[in-house]
Structures are given as C-alpha cells and as structure tokens.
Length: 457
Ligand SMILES: Cc1cc2nc3c(=O)[nH]c(=O)nc-3n(C[C@H](O)[C@H](O)[C@H](O)COP(=O)(O)OP(=O)(O)OC[C@H]3O[C@@H](n4cnc5c(N)ncnc54)[C@H](O)[C@@H]3O)c2cc1C
Image 1: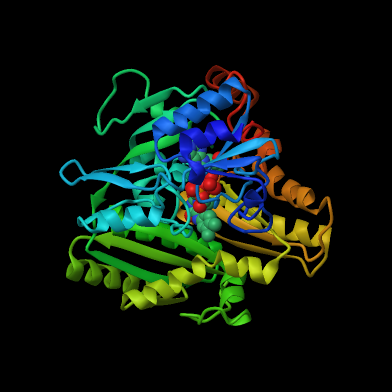
Image 2 (image 1 turned 90 degrees about the horizontal axis):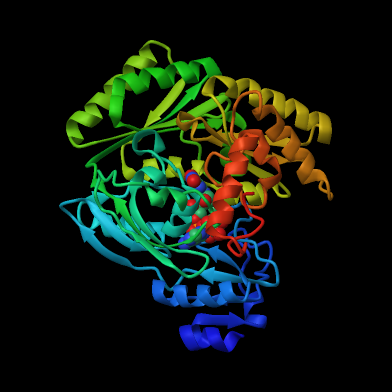
C-alpha cells in the first residue's frame, strides 16, 4: 500500500515503520505519533491523488499542522494516516493593493507575519504558538489570539480558500474580494471544523496596514469590578485603537514572576488582578501622548492600583512573555489540565471563585487553579493542578470546569476547538438540533467517514 503513496509523493513524502514513532503526537511532546504512516504532499494535486486512494480503500486520515491545538485534534489511531502539511509551507503571493496574501496551508503563522511586514503590512492574528502553528491549523480551529478585540478571529481574516474533499475533489474557492455574495460562502464549511469536512490546502487572507505605534501597559487592580470598569473606560477612551486587553489573575502573575523566578515582575505582586492593555495606531507621537494621558487620568482618579507604561519594545516583550509562558505553567504545575472557555465577562469572577472552591474541595488545599486570558474577548484560560493524578482525575476536573458553563450560556471552547478532548462535553455549548445539523453536514461531505473521525462530534 505504501508503494502507491511513494509513487505519488516520492520516498521523501512517505514516512512509515519505526520512523513514524520518532515524531511527536503533539506540541507538548508527551507521546509519539501513533499513525500507520505520515504522508507529506507538496501540493493540492498530490493531496487529491492520495485522498482518492484513501477514499477508495476506506483509509482514515488525520490532518496535522503545527500540532499546537492542545485538544488532541491531531491524535491518530494506528490504522490512520496522518496528512502533514509541512511541505506545503509557502507564501505564494502578496497583493499589496488589495492587501491580501495567498498562502499554502502548512505555512507557519510567523512566516506570514514576516512576509506581510516586508511590505509594510500586517496579518492580524497573533498568538503564542506563532512559531509552530500553521495557517491551515489556524483556519481549521478558527484561531483567535491576542488582537481579536480589534480585528476579530481567523474567520474574519479568510477571504477565500481551497480544500480537498474526502473523495479527493479539489474545491478551489480562492476568493480575494471583500464583497462576494454570489451564493453560499463555502469557505465557512472548512473554517473552525477541525479537518472533519475537508483538508484546507491554500487560503487568501486579509492584511492590514502595519500600525506604526504600539503602546502597552501592565495595570493592577484591587477588585474584579475595578478591572471591568477600567476595561469600559479604556474601550471608550481608545475606541478602535484598543488592540489587546489581557487579564492575569494575581496567582498567575505571581507564579510566573516571584514564585518561580522565571520573569522579573514589572510591577509589584500581591494584587488580585492584572491586565495588559495595548493600543495600535498610526501616529507615533500623538498615540503615545494620548495613551499616557489616558492612563495618568485613570491613575489620578484611582481607577487602578498600580501600573507601568512600557517605554520600549524590550519592556513590552517582557510583559507579554509572562502572559505567554505556557511552557512555564507546564513545568511548574504538571500534572495539570488546561482549559480554554468563554462566558460573559460579568460572570467571570464568580465562576473562578466557585471553581477554585470546588477544586480544593475535591483535591485538597494543595490543588491550584490558575486563571488568565483574553478577557476582552470573554475568553478565559484555566490551568488546574490537582497535585494528585489518577485515571479519573482529568474527567473530574472537566466536570468542575464545564458544568457551570451551561447555565451561563458559556462555551467549552473559546479558541482551541473540540478535538477529542472536549467531544463528550459538546452538549454543554451546543443544543441537540445544532449537533444534529453538524452530523448532517459531516455525512454529506464525508459519507464514508474517513476525515478526522472521532473528532468534534
Ligand atoms: C503556546 C500556545 C499558545 C496558544 N495560544 C492560542 C491563542 O491565543 N489563540 C488560539 O486560538 N489558539 C491558541 N493556541 C492553540 C493553537 O495554537 C491553535 O489552535 C492553532 O490554530 C493550531 O494550529 P496548528 O497548525 O498547530 O494546528 P494542529 O494542532 O496541527 O491542528 C489543529 C486542528 O486542525 C486540523 N488541521 C490542521 N491543519 C489542517 C488543514 N490544513 N486542513 C484541515 N484540517 C487541519 C487538525 O486535524 C486539528 O483538528 C495556542 C497553543 C499554544 C501551544
């Protein structure tokens, strides 16, 4: 069977036998790839040919980008083929007038940023995994990141795309126009559907003029009310210029600074809440004057308890490194469970307090709950470190994290998708009719059930 794939992809395009196990199953690297083989096409035609074989032989496939999804969306059974997009990683072209970029699915996010930057342009999705994650993975998970509050999620950046269907058909829907209402918007079938309806091969994404100024501050608050009031005030004061509003609960900030010595604390520890506030603009001098003025007013009016305004890029990076230190959390708190949920901002304080109480009640006083996230987007990330771990620990933690979301109309997945990990809890965020329509779409596009089976639904 491998020979048919080698005939299409060449020796380099097919990894099988012991070589498969040498590849990690995910970004965390806790286990090895379990697939029957890894196929590495170099273009859509090659992918189409191998999908025709997989379809006729009922071989199940699992698409894989940078493996940073963290919900086991790329896990493979030992009879499944992993389709890796690592050899489809090019920026094909940039239209600087229309401000669009044509990219291959395996192109790393960071490479897209660099290519846009060379033309004085910007791609608006940015996230901590930028060096490893791919645009195909970002599209398939509808990734969010640090600037959603201003630019929206990946769905808002994709103008058109190309996908290979389960039977090998190439659907090229590479629209580059901002306005195109000619019939169904087919790209939506593949955005946020985690490789269960088709394999994304190319995309046309929107670019923006690159802002010339970025102003950033780290602010501390003595209560959640103070934080939300501050959020309202800066949203009004900065209007569309506000590009990030990221919160860190006090224990998250303290853990990654003084408690672990991983990062120097830019302002004192001890406050219950911290936030990174960032604006982007096009007039360096005026933007910085306005930013400082707004924050100084808020300090004078006691709308916060402590703040530092970054004077340069180094100070800004130091603050963001604390916020993005996911590796630090793994190293300091493992064994742990990590979550990505959303709910109305006004519910967050109580949700977090109740969760902390429930986790301590279940696992004892040593257990820790660390909370941070894209609070301006209603999105919290949570790490639960119970300190003891056995077979049912993860499931018990999931019950505590997910069940309270139902009455809040919250979501079990703000960004990372469902994968395998959250599948059994989909009912918390989607009703019966929604799930039934998802199944209808799945069977229409993948009647033989070969695309990323067992994921999402
Ligand atoms: C440090 C860190 C920070 C992160 N921060 C954020 C954040 O701020 N916001 C956010 O949204 N996410 C974040 N994530 C999660 C992750 O980076 C995103 O979900 C990202 O979009 C996944 O991209 P990937 O290329 O790694 O995809 P993978 O993990 O390889 O795959 C993700 C899913 O997409 C499918 N898939 C991959 N490529 C294709 C394709 N070409 N066609 C069809 N299906 C495909 C896979 O089968 C899988 O179901 C973070 C992760 C880490 C490790």
